[in-house]
Image 1 (cartoon, helix red, strand yellow):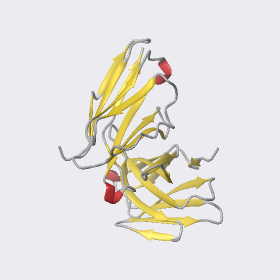
Image 2 (cartoon, one colour):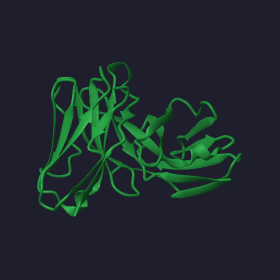
Image 3 (tube, chains in turn yellow, green):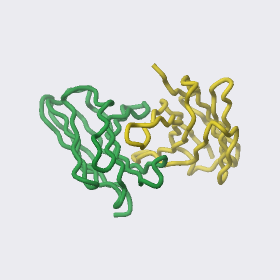
Image 4 (cartoon, rainbow over the protein chains, first blue to last red):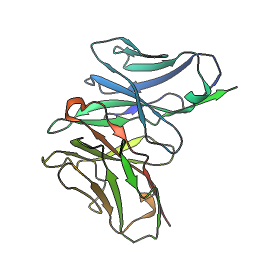
Length: 115
Length: 114
């Protein structure tokens, strides 16, 4: 079956450095991806999304890159702060009957920001 | 309330007992999702409700799992004859018809089956 997965389970970065979190997907028909941030004890929170007709999308301190050739996307966080410490999930968005979206999540990457 | 609310926050139950988990979506959100998150893993889709349409139950792992939703309001997820492998965080999310792509999650219910 199709899957969405992450390369690294844990990423440690120094405060102020840039962070890069990677995600591989296997369904070549996937056309929409979302990055979520999940802090301890909380539900996932939407960060940024990207559609397959784009290679790059920027938000506030975050950038998502999509490489359809190798079915890979990444989340870049500029000037990482302690508040960025969380688990980051990429999710593949597939359509459901009646509209709406079935989000297929990867395992996640734990980002740890060291002071 | 302003966000998706789930209750209880934590639930410890004995193997074989039934449990019922509750989700109050954001007011006006027509779509509601249930997900399961095992320790250290990503989220598994369980079920999706959209308005008065028939729910998409394709993610329910067994017939011990069921969910109900009345109109566009509260939803309950029921697990019958709980097993230890049911231990997980159960997350609920809702989204509006205008923005089905962005789902807002509750804080989850942590279920522990002993």
